[in-house]
Length: 70
Image (cartoon, rainbow, N blue to C red; front, side, top):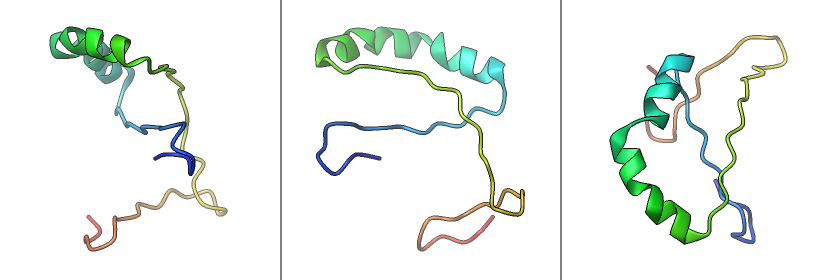
């Protein structure tokens, strides 16, 4: 996702558990690419968020256009 003025880009990434996030953050391939990220000047912020669901309190899966629900 990106703001209309292209100044902010957000990536929403799902991890099923905290250990999966830890594995991603310590992956050697990610570490190897760290200098590229640092040289880009991008600011990185990690925010833990939760799905608030629909107004009835349920969580509904939404498919991308042109794809079937799974």
